[in-house]
Length: 111
Length: 112
Image 1: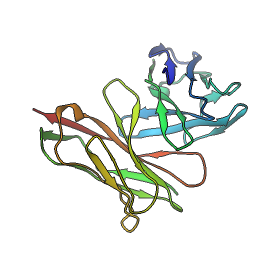
Image 2: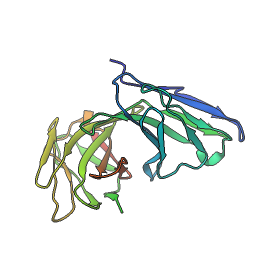
Image 3: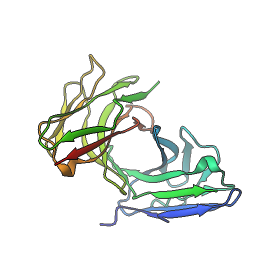
């Protein structure tokens, strides 16, 4: 069982570049979400989706875009990367009994 | 609003020592409470959960009891092992809405 798959695992960007972090799940979960993890800050919710075609903002949405065209995929887009977006990013889906399933993370550095 | 406060780490214990990681929460209504564990280089994994007051969640020797009167969900283990070394996150899910709220995490290192 693949669970939640994130790519890439590591990425270095220059300020102003754009990129897309990919996330896919094979558990048919309606709910998917993106978090960033920063030292001393825990996990903070960026965006989430409760189903295909539906997305909403979390705690720290600025600088990030999402879309949900299928149940399986939930990509996160950085349109113009900034050093403040240097972080570890996790995608997670949620089962009906509220259990979150996390991907292995993407470590992003913006220079 | 909703928030979770965890004891700050890092915590270093000898093998077979008793572990307590404190967690308190603020929430409207009656949230579900969780402990997640993150091993080095990996994503978070659910360790245990409790969905109502006085429920006790347990898994792999870890336990936590949902205390509504003290708004707490402290994690305990009677005898830690080196393999328990990880970062532990307390979290809550409100009974309304679609967001989880995480604490800042507590790093645990167990030495032989």
